[in-house]
Length: 326
Image (cartoon, rainbow, N blue to C red; front, side):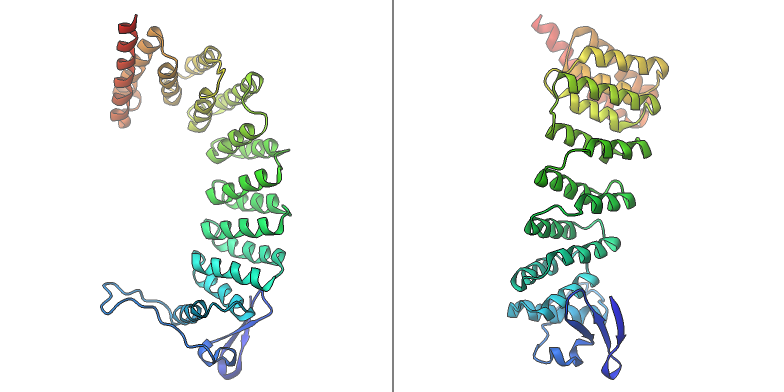
């Protein structure tokens, strides 16, 4: 947004729309027909917020435009300033979309505006929802994967960006190459839980978890664990695999045992094996799991003592159940 001095010492802002806003709006000729609508905080507001004069004016004029239901170039320009002063203003984004549709604006140019706002406010649900609606209206993916990849370079665990990327993948069937992209992120940060989640999402929505794919995923996961055995993310990935039909529990237990052999104090491995014992209960595995719970709560992970007591209770209850049934 470029700025220059307006008549009478005011300020003009060239927006992403053809309309130029001149501040203060109260002295701008283009807004002389608008009666601003002040914010109603009631007769005795308990803790009134000290808004800046510019914020107050922008919002007062925006409320007036909303009341008129005016879909015009000046209204569209005003929504840009509304979003600049508060990027999380849901009503600002919604009314902007309505203006764009009513004016039949160039929606591809709107993507550039969204990207500009995202540089300052990327963790913003309203922004990414707006982008989704605009892309859906355009009807083609364009550069959405590149846009999300750039955003994830700045913040690899931004939930809103990942949610948008997943929508794009599903909407336009762009899964080809996504596993390679995820693996590139994991090479940079093997603890990137968002990338692990994305890997599960991609497999689930493409090949599914048949026996061959499960074996591949187990192998990939344990290679990762060789580098960082106490990394919670791949252990959680294995828990996701464990919920699939045909999970090779014996093979996974052998691989986990190999981790423990190298690092007997690996708390995440012990925690995983306790969950395996509960999911696929046998008397020997539950007996071992009970000992693991004791070791974790008294020695290896005392800070989570209450949790291990909870797990121990489940293990002993399951063990009693098995013994009773036999």
